[in-house]
Amino acid sequence: GNSVTQMEGPVTLSEEAFLTINCTYTATGYPSLFWYVQYPGEGLQLLLKATKADDKGSNKGFEATYRKETTSFHLEKGSVQVSDSAVYFCALSDHPGGGNKLTFGTGTQLKVEL
Amino acid sequence: EAGVTQSPTHLIKTRGQQATLRCSPISGHTSVYWYQQALGLGLQFLLWYDEGEERNRGNFPPRFSGRQFPNYSSELNVNALELEDSALYLCASSLGQKNTEAFFGQGTRLTVV
Image (cartoon, rainbow over all chains, first blue to last red; front, side, top):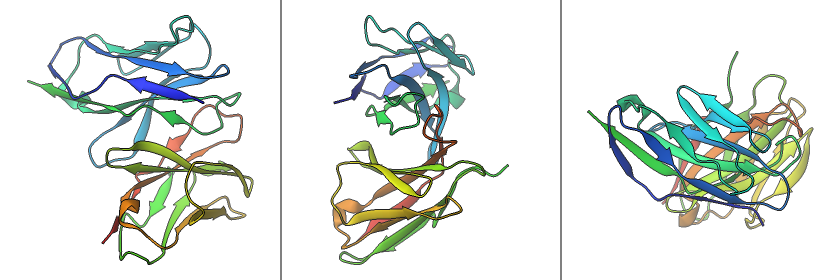
């Protein structure tokens, strides 16, 4: 079956530090890949997505590249801010077009300090 | 445009009771998904409805059930509540089966005492 593995948290960084959150996946087909963010007390927000190999998703300074050869979709940001503190979830959807259920990683909590 | 709305925001029930959670998708969206976010278990897929039909179901017992109405809103029912059903229940909607993006609501926090 499908699965997503994320690095354990929490990750604590100083403001303006470089961020990498690792994500690898296992899927039988050709999944679409997503990063969602959950701020305290809120639901999930889509941060970025990639639907095929070598696609790069980007939003709000965050980037992730769909690497089929390494089955990875690592999240990166060059300079984090305190406002980026949240829980980040990597997810995949294996339905063509992504309309089917999402399989999530366990989430990585990011804390950014001044 | 309104996003995905869920009600109630919080719900407290006693073990053995039934809980009903509601979700209104974004206007024009026909697919609704339900997820459970329990402490220590991450986000688990519960149910997927599209065009009024149940399309997929996660690994949950039959006491978790739901339906989708003609206006595409959805209801999740949990019967014979157990303490471990305490969780944040998230609803998401998308334009249809082939759409890549699901939009999430704020969730209903269910507490079983």
